[in-house]
Image 1 (cartoon, rainbow, N blue to C red):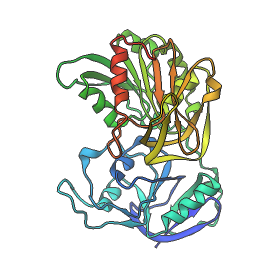
Image 2 (cartoon, rainbow, N blue to C red):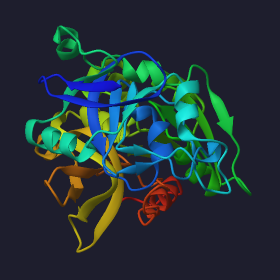
Image 3 (cartoon, rainbow, N blue to C red):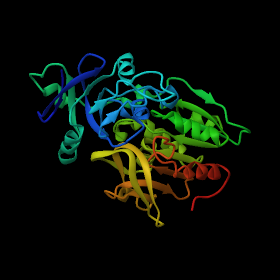
Image 4 (tube, rainbow, N blue to C red):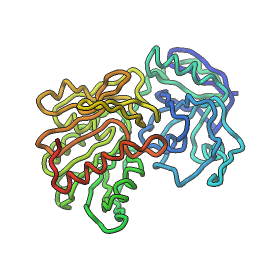
Length: 354
């Protein structure tokens, strides 16, 4: 027997999965029907307990080729965990993998009921435990801090281009998903991934054709040193930002960010063009958003979320910089926004943004 206890006092009883021990974290839900491996290995979930709204998880087992990075989440919550996966690529059951990675979890609870609580009251902290806590003060006091430094790589690494090299890209790793690197390499880019605290002068000294700002966890405004370095980079070299990279670029340009009530997480998030009629179904994982109005006269909002109208993309005229909140590299969900990588390629080739 195990418990999921929310910081508002609500308690849900289930059964223990994964590693032993208690886990306190920010409880968030993700709506993807598939892609649980990408979710579990996405560094952007650092400091969080992840709840899957889809009721059956683990049915295709553990497939290391699909991992996006090192798991950084604090706990995992599912309705039903499959104990006997069926997939020719599977290398084992998910429960054993959770144990091996030290990730506590709970199964057998009504995850959609918990999701409704979060949607009504907003994101809150929670604890996975074997005994009901006598005091919820530690749960309520928990905050996600220093997450980018926790998940970023510690040393630079070069990834060769597939085929003939076309461009050299420096990727600033704030918690990068591996498929961002794969997407660039597949388009003929040699990618040098560097730690989050790499100085702008060191990046520019390498004479990259472009700079990629990766996704990552936590409150973007906390990363004041990273924001200061981006102020030196933007305008000097073509820049493309995704997720946290989108938010950090906005802060570097003088904008603001805000925390969303319960965030956008899943492979089914609708995004509309502001200068066209198309709506894209995108993969997302974020709890903060750029305040587009704070960038009036500086940037142009290019995409908005069709559900709540929050900012999903910005372009900075004259700066050779554009960013998006969603994940165009995602393979767990749709791939129809991959054209943004091609836009980055053209920008590095000298094309001006419209």
